[in-house]
Length: 200
Image 1 (cartoon, rainbow, N blue to C red):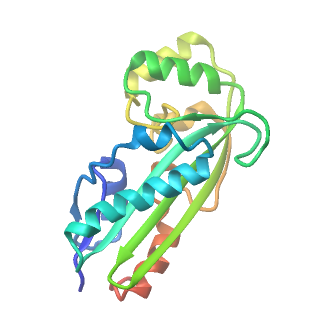
Image 2: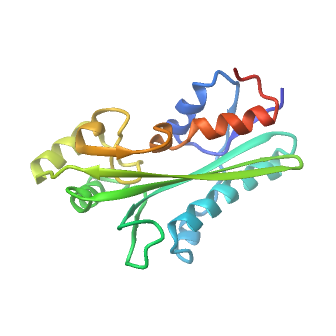
């Protein structure tokens, strides 16, 4: 079986990949995400490019491995391809950042864009997932209480929907719930089977 590498230090993506029961390594791609965010405004283009760049950076050092790169942003706007102004939300980083993001999202619908790129010798495949989430109306006390409880500082949109963060929402429309956490396993499994990884 080929070596499998996750080009990410995200504990959330690692936990998802562990579900498949395949041995894998985690490598930091060391890609400067801010430099791409400064010049790419379209969220689908941005996440797709970053997923590829992360995978490629690790693949260059491990040309005999299968490398998985991924990226995710929250998009506040009517839809990812709308001509109206769209605001992308990355990782908030701290309490104040989370408070700002959740205060913006509360009572509204937003999209979560997740892109994945898989590289191997003579192989490249990418895909994306767009999940729509409707957050319920929240007051500042509820938002602060949630942030203090979960500290979602490394999560795009400032919530951990796999735990208490689910209580923030009225509705979620998704083809794959694992995409919300950061790594859409349904599509990923199809690709790993193509590469002869032993999955059911």
